Length: 181
Image (tube, rainbow, N blue to C red; front, side, top):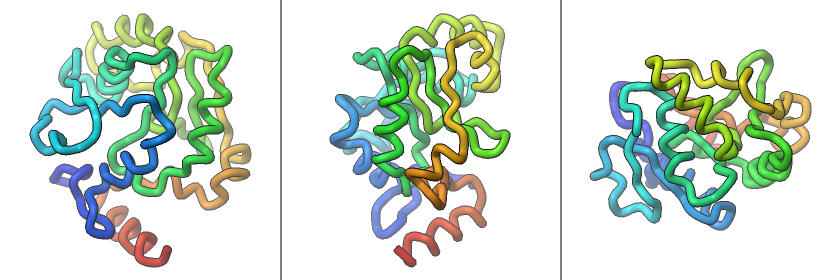
C-alpha cells in the first residue's frame, strides 16, 4: 500500500481501531506488535517490538506470543476491519489439545487469523534464528488444527473476516463493503 495500513480511515476510524473494537471483550489483553509505537500510543493496547527484527509475519507473531501473559494467543492482522467475533471464539474453542488453530481458505493458510499456544515459541525461535521464514514453515513441527473453508463458512458465509487491505484495489473494495453494511 505504500503507507501504514493500520491507520487508513474506514468509517472515520483507523482500521486498527475496528480490529481493537472487535477484540475488546474477547481477549484478556490486546498486544500490538510494532517497531514504530508512536502512532499507536493512544490505543488501549500494550505495544511490543519485534524480538527478531526484519523477520516478517513470523517475527511479529513470535513477538506477540512472547509478550502474551496467557497460554493461548489470538493473532489477527491490523488491517482486517470485518472480523467476526463468533468465528474468533470458535477458533479459540478448538485450541485445547493443539499447538495452533489456523484457518485455510482453499489451499492458503491464514496465519494472521489464528490461535497459537506458547508451545509454538521454541519451533518459531529455531526458524527465526535462521533468517526470514514463512509462517507456515513451522506448522509441520507442531500439532496443528486446520479449520477448512467449509467449516469457516458455517460461521462466516461470505468470509468477510478474512478481508484485508494489501493493495489499493483491496482498499477500495473494503471501503465499498463498509458503505454497503
